[in-house]
Length: 268
Ligand code: PGA
Image (cartoon, rainbow, N blue to C red; front, top):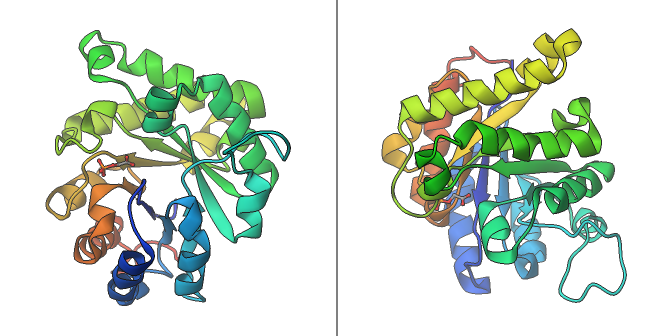
């Protein structure tokens, strides 16, 4: 059974004061779920230290929103995976659509990042997804397969499955427009089938092991329905993760949808 996972992506939001206030409200709400699902918070780089201290020994993990594919050197403004590891990060988002669209990251860049994150024993969260234009041109499947294929070419299929794939339709991110359960279901199924096709001999195992989560305007009101879909293993939450009550409710929806509240899912 795949362990559910919920990740907060704060993006470029927060301050020392607001982070503290958010975490003080959030931690008691998440404590209920920390054994039955993987939970992570990805603040902006300057706040990693603060959030690490606030997380303490709660079992909730620290994550980062990006990493350089280089180890060190003359790369002004970049942060390496080694540095993130030293700061106590467990997860690193790679290839978020905002990185791809606003900072020109290619699938090759993203794959190199995936490799460097995984190489340090951290868990890369590979974000994939189509733009509205690509969806309207019926290119959703091709685009997502290409994004995943680039990582498989770089690290191999087994290594892909050591990370997490986050399906985030670009048109649903931060827009309030969520993909319908049918749309999400179809893409998640496609991703699993694609992975199965990449390794026919080991297909059963790897495609069934891979955790595929959904992101894009997940809110308390739609979380349960989305997380109840059979191929959805959790969520990557942007806007709603900045509100303790909303994120807590979303965690509750994931626990309920995955059956972990009723003991249907193995915990460790
Ligand atoms: P959103 O962002 O929940 O605000 O749509 C999701 C993400 O970008 O990871």
